[in-house]
Length: 209
Image (cartoon, rainbow, N blue to C red; front, side):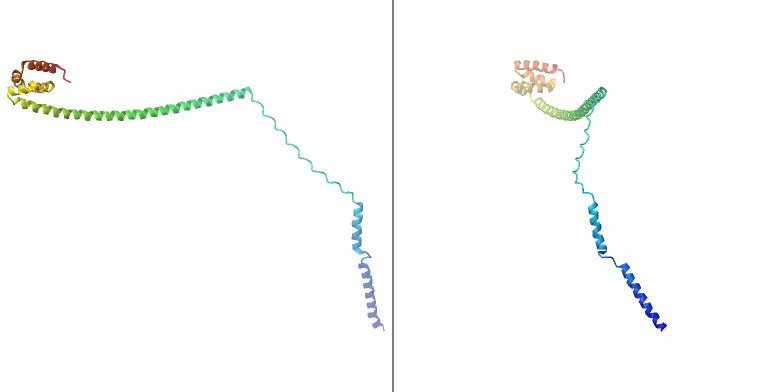
């Protein structure tokens, strides 16, 4: 009998412990939810009233800048001196630039004048050479004409000389030899011979260029 009672007693004890444990663990009526509902209500009843929202404060105006102080007499004098020095420097630079421009212009003018002088000198040389050539040709023509009249008989030459223009006749007689010219002058008209003799003397009295 005792061995059978032991298991039954263990089952009864186990059941009793389970019931007690369930009673301990199970919440009371209303449980946590009820507690949760009561706590906010109590908190709301004891909370202080909310303050009305205050408007934002206007920003403070910026500090006013102080007006600049007028320059002192020393500063004004220094500024005037600096301005005078700047003006003087500008004037000197302008004069220097003008002087440099004049020097350049003078150099260019001198160069052009030098070139012009060289051109004129070359032209003069060409003209002198041309004059010499022309004079030589002219002299050759006169010599040929003189030779022609010297080969003629004095009477025939005198007949031509009586009607020949004075400048041409002077050039011919001036180049003729005295021995050839004397017979021709003797055969000419007396008045014509006297005139040509006077003009020929005046021509030979002129200074040679």
